[in-house]
Image (tube, rainbow, N blue to C red; front, side, top):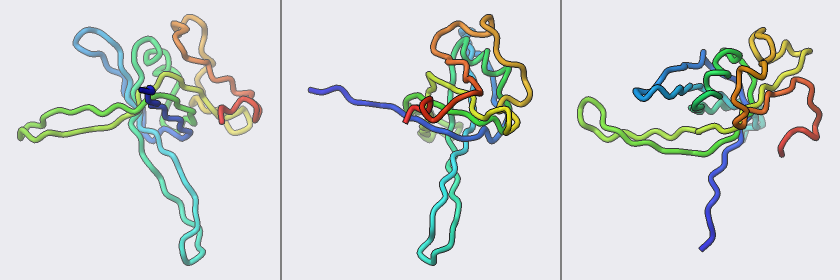
Length: 147
């Protein structure tokens, strides 16, 4: 039997300030709300926009480093996998949430568009563990886009 594929690639803007917290075991986790936009024509021929909101979760040293340089409005490329969690609310009802667990984050937006890091300095080598964070160079060409 063939293995499955669970891969998500998104380009969007952070809609609010990311939240960095720690689990009871001390593991860092950052939650971000990413907005992606789609523009299309209606049946009447009018252009309209649709925004989808995605919850993105980043773990460990990557979360700690990114929390220092991303802000509301930051333009990002996110690559990860879909994961659904289940829990019980206070009334005992089962609840579900689907989120993207990110393993690759790139800061987008060049110097001409005001950057994408909220004016923060570029990350240094000591901010990251090298575990998959690609740094997000602000100088990129069409050949650098993964699709």
